Image (tube, rainbow, N blue to C red; front, side):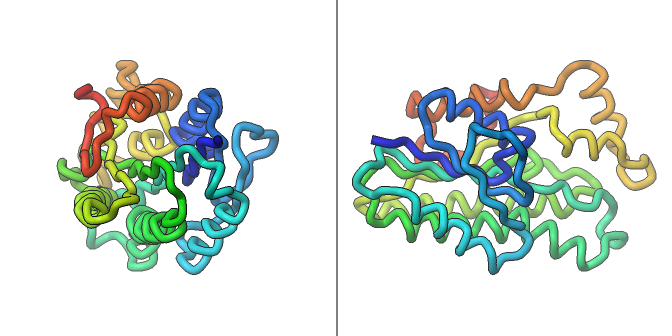
Length: 243
């Protein structure tokens, strides 16, 4: 019986860490990312630009065409891909950038979750969605309106879907996880933003200089352990730094 995990942005940063940890623990790993990483044998890779919403459902459907409903022990979707977006006050962000960031961070996970739930209806196994959210969902940062708003949307989506799934016998469990401060391209982008665009930039420089960033591998291991031990209960919004 196979254990399956589908990870968006699964070939770099936290997504790569999750791909490697789940693969090491016996999962068949699928990565859905904009680009294909050479010699990344941990995952079966599918190219999909999540800002192009018309490509998302066909890509996930293609992944499912390679799965066997009768030979699956567990199937998991991890919505990990995201973009910090333009770091600036809202009046200085152009409509195209606003649209792109909300498409990638919120609309794509909505479509992925909807499609995953629909495609797993015939799977009589453990079914789960992990949304990678952020403390920015509840803590407003000046110049992060796009990121904060989209992550708040992720959390509310998690709460609503968890309530919907309570009414189904063969239900999908869904959670949101705040991974903390992870050493990824997103952190690099934040600390390299000019101070006139981002008043809190020094705080993010200090995180880096003081060695306060967690590695993607560390965080991935924590998420896997929480998943494996059954601590991710339906509808949970969890900051792993508090565990």
